[in-house]
Length: 110
Image (cartoon, rainbow, N blue to C red):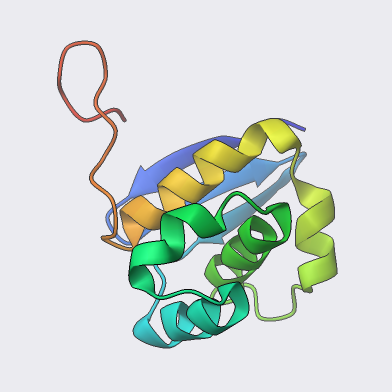
């Protein structure tokens, strides 16, 4: 499976196999829940992503808004290790917690 995404203003569509999923921005409630799960405050968020289970939880919180029937166990089986950095970056970006990545010309990457 490869991770393909189309970044939108309020989400990103990712394709896993032949299925499309929409990543949604995190709400304050999601961030508060993740702080509890990660055992850190907002400043420690970046360090929390050194653990794979925390990345799975982040992706789950983003996906469950548009896909309420998804289970956290499914999320861990949907993506490859090589997808992790892109997933975290896209979720943080659409949530307003990270600025868009720049390409070689200095403009925001599409």
